[in-house]
Image 1 (cartoon, helix red, strand yellow):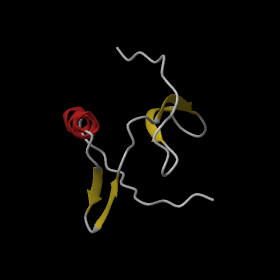
Image 2 (cartoon, helix red, strand yellow; image 1 turned 135 degrees about the vertical axis):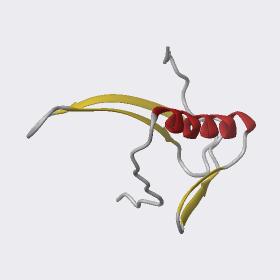
Image 3 (spheres, rainbow, N blue to C red; image 1 turned 60 degrees about the vertical axis):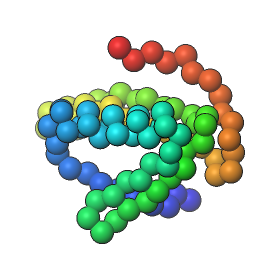
Image 4 (cartoon, rainbow, N blue to C red; image 1 turned 90 degrees about the vertical axis):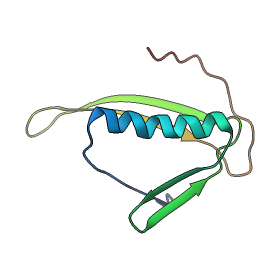
Length: 91
């Protein structure tokens, strides 16, 4: 079962999206908690020192023009401080 703790979806320009990603990266670098908020909703997550990092690029086809997406996901088990390594490169 999946419980959605927070969800926000807005169309933004590339600079604003980069700012959001930088803010998350800065929090991860500093070892601090990441707080997500939008309007009256918010959630604070303590990301452990090691987590699983998933990057996925997709093309969705169907009615209309194909839609492309890239997803960045961090996963960890509550209370678990260790996860596997990475071979990912982003250029």
